Each structure stands twice: as C-alpha cells, then as structure tokens.
Length: 571
Image 1 (spheres, rainbow, N blue to C red):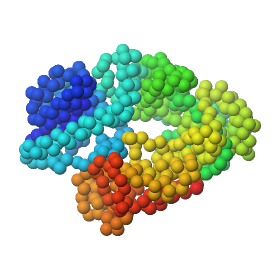
Image 2: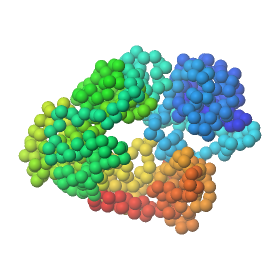
Image 3: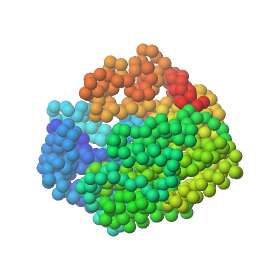
Image 4: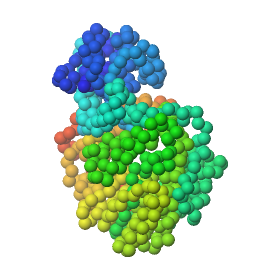
C-alpha cells in the first residue's frame, strides 16, 4: 500500500510517496519518467491519500498522460470542476485509489490541529510566478512529507473504514478496483442500485404504514399528506406531545424538555437499526435495488452480531447497514429514491409518536424526557411497576410494527440541554450515555476545546467544580480551539493582520493587547468573528503536544464558557 500527496506550482510539481510494505520513500520532482516508472512498478497496489479522490489522482494521471499539472490544478480548484471532466484520457489510466477522507471531514489540517501537531503552512506560496529555488523545493518536500505521514496516522485511526470496504469487496467477489469507490458507491454496487429513482415522479406519494394506531396525534401524520405542506421548508413547530414541546419536519420529528437536570431512574428505549429495519419490514427502497437479498444479508448480520454481543464481527455490517439507508436522498446515488426516503423519515417518527401516545395515559409516573430520531428517554417514578407497564406497551408495539427495541436503565442523573445534547449517568455503576458536542466522547481526530468538555463531564460524573478541573490542568493542548475556514472565506485575520494559514489553533489570552480572530468572506468582504473564539487570543500553530500552559493563558475564559454551558443543561 502506497500513501502519496502532490504539490503543484506554476513551473514545478512534486510528489512524496511512502511505500508501507517495502518501507521506502520516493520523492519525485518535475520528473514524469520517474513517476511513470514508479506507477508501472506499483499499479497493482492501492494508492492512498487524503482528498485524493477529488485531486491527487487526477494530477498523477494527468502527468502520465502528458498534461500540465498546473492546468489540471486550476481546473479542479479555481474552476471548481471535477477532475474527471478535464479529459477522457484520465479515465483510461487504471489506479487503485483509496481516499482516507470522509465526506464529513473538515480537511487534513483540522485533523493535524486536533492531534496537536504543527499546522503551519509552507513558506512557499502556491501562486509563485517563477521556478522554485532548491531551498524552496526542500521546504515544500518537507511540508508534503508531513502531510503524507499525517494521512497515514489518520488512516490508522479509522482503519475500520478501510477494513469494511475490503471485507465486502471480498465477500461479494467484487473487483479490487471497487476500493476506489466511496462507501456509498460500494453499497449501491452490492445492492444492484439501478438508478430508477431518477425517473420516478412520486416524491410525496409515500404511504403511512398500516400498523399505525394514532388517534390523539393523528393530525400530525395527516399534515404530511396535505399537498399544501409538500415543501421541505415547512414544519410543525411547538407541538406539545405528552407535555413536551416537539418539532415535526420532513427530516423527522423530535422533542425534549429543555435545560432538564433531574435525579431519578431513567429508561432509554432505542429502536435497533431503525431506518434499515424499516427498509426490510416495509420494503422501502427495494424498487431501486436489483439485489435486495444482499441488503437483507447485511442488515440481518448486523442485528445477529449485535444480539450476540460480538462487536468485532458486527462492525463492518453496522457501518454498511447505516451507509445504505442514507443513499435514498442522495441525487447522485444509484439508490436514489426520495419517496422511499420520505417514507422512512415520516413513518419512523410516526411509529415512535404512536408509542408515545400509548404510554401517555401513564404519564403521572412515566414521564417523557425526550423523543429523538430512533428512541425515547423516560423517567420512571415507580420503577418496578412503571417498567412492567412500559415493557408491555413496547412489546405490543414491537409485535405490531415489526421493529425491535433495546432497553437501558440508568439509576442516577440526567443533564439535558436539548434533544441533541445530553448526558445520563448511572450512579450505581458509573456507566454514562452521552450525546452532543458539549459532552461527547473525545477522540484524537475530534479534540476541540477539550478542557471545557472534560470540565462539564467531570462535574456531571463526579461533582467536581468546573473551575477546579480547568485550573488544575497545565497542558496547553487541552485548551485548544481549532478553526479552519472553508473556500467561502478569503483569509483569517488576527486583529488587522492577515494570517497565511487557513487553519489555526486559538487560545484565550489575558493580554488585552492581543486581538480577536476573524474570517473574511469572499462574497461580502467583511470580517466575521470566528465561532466560539475569545475576545483576546493568541495562536500556537506549532506542535502543541507536551507544551505547558503559559502565564498569559486566560483560564477564566474557559471557566466562564464551561459555567455558561452548564446552565444550558439546567444546572
């Protein structure tokens, strides 16, 4: 397996390739013959990179075809065109290309920032209008090598994504060229996506499933069938269901008690693999699958290994099962079927609403805390009696709908900001269930304002004041705010000073002479304050791992932010 990255200038280009199997590095500068020789010797190997599906593979193929890589670069970046459109010749160059980047990623530099590594840009501007000097070439090679090494680290952090792709390629006897596809494209290939959805004209003609037994809240379901509401911008807002404010839209429905902090016994009721389970039960989306039996194999295996508690065996099936249902709303997917997508979203929420309606008569002691996409949270005031009542209602619902529920009981405390941000802790076992940016489980690839997250969780779990957690921490990385601007912005400003980096690591400063940080919109040309950034700040874009907090770090800013967020959770 080879990891590679290109850097392209007007009069120069270079590539760094790290051959993992043979432990070799190849650095090629302006030498098309050397690149061709390396390619020919390794064209049966997998070439991995970050965002290489959209960029680097077309630079590689273009050079092999004799094109000017700078023209391809400009076609992709400046004209915002897909690389394959540059020339049909590019499609004739075979390449087993694997992209480490997922479609939700913010970019390689953001990951480097999260991991605490240097996010400094090369001192050589990409628009330089002359040949590079030897010193500049060396600088760019070092920069490029670093990006390849970072890509390898990210690949290893998310190795499950690659293993899932390889597992299904082998299982379904697909050609190894399928490794170049996205997970969504691979799912469409496995299921025999037939692109019939592009010809359908029934987007809002979705059925409401026969198993629904809505009475009190039937009007919520009927709203979706009214042609006047067939507009994705419309929604039913501030609907009170079981005493809890709800919103029902075309993306689904949800409701929660805002700023809810309570001690008691809480039951989380989740539908197992809800969207895929609906697909199988009601055959939603089957009309765009030529091989629905392959979908059922993936889905059934996901459920089977979940029931057995075999997380390792389940993982590829869980990843692929979740990837399938999302394809029906993607216009470019061979599984595109907006009617079936609407059917799943609407019926999913109406079936949960049905369950809430059947539980509501017992709301004196079984109190709804939240209703989300695939589950409910209830507080049980009389646990033994309430659990039996709720269990019986759920069992009847499961038999009627064909869905399956998982129960998790927490004897402890809930902190809930809204439907998408909460933490529940079991005071007997220490187990927690959390969701949302403020209290999520941190990872090496998602490490933004970690000290604030840790202070909140430490308070919720152990009652430790947020100020104590923050004041006792002396690792600068824990205070980092990593911000990367998109292509919609021209640059980042630190006060009036333009920063060459598009990604920066920000820290709150005690110095009032330190300015704030802003981003400049290309369209409007006006500076906008970067979200969550302090009024006074400093940057540290070098490697921050192991660096201790300087005296001018304003820890009080983080304390104030943590206390503000605690109030959002009802504390």
